[in-house]
Image 1 (tube, rainbow, N blue to C red):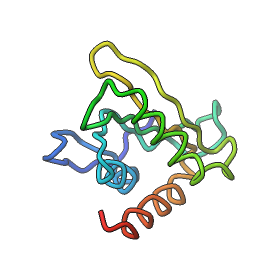
Image 2 (cartoon, rainbow, N blue to C red):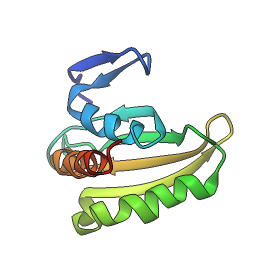
Image 3 (cartoon, helix red, strand yellow):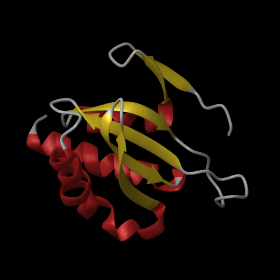
Length: 126
């Protein structure tokens, strides 16, 4: 994978790829903490292109299956349902972090997903 431009985010104590930062900021502003992210690489998947991702946990209760699945599949899914193979959602269980929500996306879809979540966040005033 290519090295991407990053910005250091003191609150997360991590370097975040600059292109994925708006999505990370929107998810974190909705009560979740990002634990991993990458903006991916554009192009045909497997021929130089790679999916990007944002992985996040619930700040309130990392082991709450209900909170993370409702956020992924009730809240987020309608925002990205029309994007088919460009964006996917997943929930996994980690012994250390609890339930982890994942957004996997083609880099070309990142701006649209980020705009939709940011607009919602602004609309509800968070």
